Length: 303
Image (cartoon, rainbow, N blue to C red):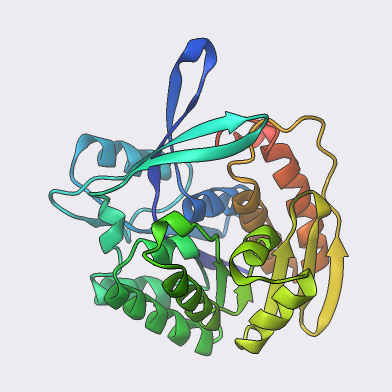
């Protein structure tokens, strides 16, 4: 069955370590990474598009060409004069990553400013993906615009997937962060949080507490990712645990959750089997974290 997946958020210039103390440039960002991995595994009759805003500068042109070259559609992307993509640098310590960011004039901060463009893109799609980072970079007014459209999409029966992907440094206050993340969950039909984030920032004492909190917000389906301890699925009234896949050596965990999200959604919308899709996604994530950078070439991935 053909379909359309739309990911909404910010794609950035990525600088990562290379040999000889050099840096390698690429393009990445949590929801774009999800779109990339979904494209690797969705059937050919599914389209994958990205919704954001970029500038009219050379690096924006390179980013659009990069997206298109990896099979991600750019037809919904706005061009904003005087703006440009943000940039981040990956710092690694025994495979665990931290980041430095430069995004003060990021065009993506205005992605929801054109409400008609946003509505048209969402209405044309079957699966919509967004994240806490998507919400964090927007003004409160634009958050309201985006969430209103996502609520409409969920009410119409579309699959609206949300990864809270909590990044405290992007938020003005912890209170606004928690409130907006909760509002994002209310607009979603599937929430895919990471337990470490939820325990740290919402005080959840267990995975069961995380599931209960999102259920209380009206979320029907939840997948809690827990790193090396696998993932817990609470979908359609049933609960299952899927273990993580074996990893020989962790090289770079940058896109572990994003690759899980994208490959899970690809298999889930095709088969309807959430447990099998999560097992497959665990294999993909295990492969991704054994390579540098957010986006791993298809020939290095399983399946």
